Amino acid sequence: MRSKSADTTKPRRADEPTLFESRRLLTLILVAALMWSLFNVDWRDGVLHTGGISAFREMASALLTPDLSGEVLAKLIGSVWRTLAYAFAGLSLALAVGFPVGLLASGVLRADGAAPIRRIARVILAGLRSVHELVWAWLFVSAVGLSPIAAVLALALPYSGILGRVFAELFQDVPEGSLRALRNAGSSESQVFLYGRMPFVLPDLLSYTFYRLECGIRSATVLSFVGLGGLGFQIQISLADLAYSRAWTFILGLIVMILLVEAWSGAVRKKVIS
Amino acid sequence: MTQSSLLRSALASLNDNSPTAVALDRVSKSFNGTLAVDEVSFTVPRGQSIVLVGPSGAGKTTLLRLMAGSVKPDEGTISVHARDLAEFSPGRELAELVGIVAQQYDLVANLSVLQNVLAGRLGSWGLWRSLLSLIAPRDKPLAMQALTRVGMAERAYRRASQLSGGEQQRVAIARVLVQDPAVLLADEPVASLDPARSEDVMRLLTGIARESGKTLVASMHAVDLAARHFDRLLGVRNGAVQFDSPPADVTVEMLGALYQLEGLRA
Image (cartoon, rainbow over all chains, first blue to last red; front, side):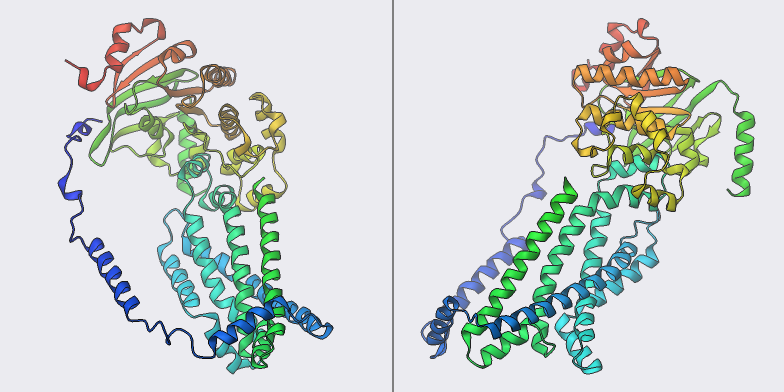
C-alpha cells in the first residue's frame, strides 16, 4: 500500500458547509413557511365548525358505553370475519406474486445481475404499487360488481408491488462475507440465495409481511366503505345513523383484531429467531 | 460439462503429477491505483504448510484471495496443481482446487451448524438437492465426520449465531473439510481469538493438513504463533515478499524490518 501515505492531516475546507448551502437554505424556507402558515390560521372559528365540539363530546361519551347488544355483537363477529378474510386472501395473493417478482427485481439469482429482467420486474412492481387499493377497488367494483373478488384483488395488487419492492431490497442487502464464503465453496448464485440470503433475511421478511398484514386489515376496513361489506361498512352505517355507541363497538373490534395479529406476529418472529 | 472443459480437465490430470501445489509467477494486483501485491513469485510444494506473516495492510489477504481465485491478478499467473486459475470462474471446479477459511468466520448466522458445514458440499450439489437438503439434510454422515474431527459434533443442531468465536472458526474449518479442496487457504484464521483459542485452532488446522497430506497456505500477524505451527514463513510487507525461510532461520532483525512503522524508518 504505497500511495496511501498522502497528507491526511490537513482539514479540507471544501467539505465545510456554508450558510447558503442548498440543504440549510431549504430548512430555512420550510421553517419560515411553517411560521407564516401558523399566523394565518383562524383559531377562533376556523378549526371546528359550530356543532363540532358537541359532536366530539357525544362521541367521547359514547366510547364509554359501546353498544354490546347481541344483535350488534353478531354483526361485529360477521364483519370482523369478512374483513379478516379479505386481508388474508389479499395478502396471500400478494405474497405469491410479490416474492417471485421481487426476487427477479433484486437480480441476485445471477452473477451478472440479469439487468433486462430486473428492469422489467421493477417496472411491474412500481406499476402495481403506484395505484392505491381504494382506486383499484373502484375499478374492480365497476368491472365485476360488489363481489369479494373485487376486494381481494384490490388489496392484492398494490400489496404485491410493495412486498416485492421491499423483498428485493432485503435480498440485495445481505453482508458479503458469508455469501463470499458460500461462493468459495462452489455455490451458484441460486444456491447462495437459498443458503445465504434467505436464512439471513427470513426474520425481517416475516416481520415485514406481518406488518403488511396489519396494514391489510386496516385497508380492508376502509375498502368496505366502497360497499364491499365488513367492518368499515358497519362503521359507516352507524355514523350515518348517529349511533356513536354502535360505531365504537366496531372500532374497538378493529383495534382488538390488530392487537391480536401483532401478538401473533411477535410469537412467530420469536420462534424464527431463537 | 462442455467439451472444452472436459478436454481441459483431461489435460490437467495428465499434468497433475507435478510436485508443486501452488505457484505464483510475478503476480501484481492494485486496487484503485494502490498497489496491494507487487510482482510476487513463490511456489509451495505439495503437502507443505506455509504462512504469510507481516503487518496489517501488507497484502496478505489479497495474496490469499488471489490464490483462492476470487480476485484476478492484474499481471502474472497463479497456478494450483498445474492449472492456471485464470481459466476458472467461481464454481465447482475451482472449489475442488482451493478452499478458504476466512478472517471473519463468515458462517450463515441463522442456519444450524450442520447446514453451515453442508454448505461446503454446495459445489457438488444441484439446485434441487440443495433445496431438499435444507429440509432433510443430505450427506449428513460426511458433515458429522468433519464436525467430530473439529470437536463440534455435539453442537450440530445449534444455530451458528449461538457459538463463540473459536467454535465458529471450528465450524468454518469443518465446512472446508467437507468441501475437500486440494489446497487449503486460511486468511488470518485466529485474528479474533484469544491466545489459548488461537493455539488450539492452529493445531487443529495444521493437524488436518498434515494427516490428509493437503497443502496449507495461511496468513497471520502473530509471528511467534506462526513459527510454532508452520514449516516455512514468508515475510510480506508493502505487497512484496521480504524473506522466505524456515522459522528457525528468522532473526530478530528480519522481523524488526518487517514490522517497522513507516514513519519511524530512517
